[in-house]
Image (cartoon, rainbow, N blue to C red):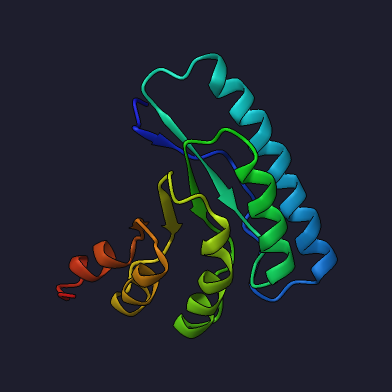
Length: 144
């Protein structure tokens, strides 16, 4: 595709999910990410590959995911999965997670595009964002 940044396949479990099921989902995504990174490193070209840190709103699973994925040679890190029920929970999650992500590599918050969440995330060190939210609003004639 020629993308500058590529992100491995991961599983996106729902917000309210049993912890054991969430843990299995995190490990499944980790296996896919490690396999994708191994294949990517055989032919890097000019693409950066970001890992996706998962764990829902479970602080221990997020910490474990960050520790494992930051031990691998990814070019950057995306924060994905369920990010909370509202901006306050998202910001609390980032407060625990962001200190665990290397500051010498870019980080990206997946699926967040509303102004409040962006403004709440920037002070925690989030570099970039993506979302369908602004495009959807523009399609309906709304300005942010």
